[in-house]
Length: 106
Image 1 (tube, rainbow, N blue to C red):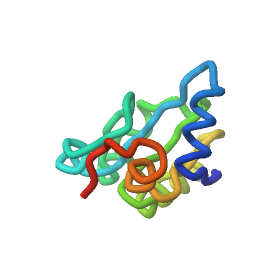
Image 2 (cartoon, helix red, strand yellow):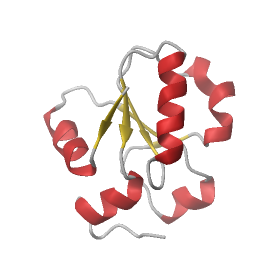
Image 3 (tube, rainbow, N blue to C red):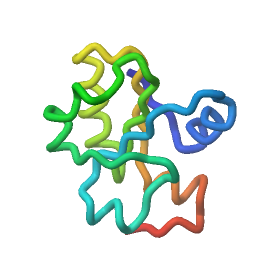
Image 4 (cartoon, rainbow, N blue to C red):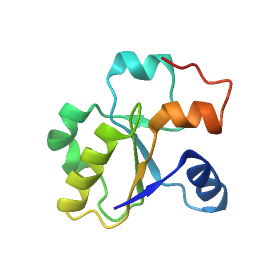
């Protein structure tokens, strides 16, 4: 597991041919306020039940509000054998500040 800042993730996504899974682990009410385009919502509490539906070999970027929950989920996925997990440090809040200044914040 590794951490990327919002700017690093933006650059990584631009340079990557095969898009990673953008896994948003916030709650549905948070996701309705704002989300990174193309992200898939699976709230943190649902990850253990959903982990078998995810591809452990696919690059997976875990996203939350500030990067705390996503770090915990990223470590869990790493423990479950996922080989390429990235935590978005600072979460969607950092994304809104550093990459997409038009994104709603909360």
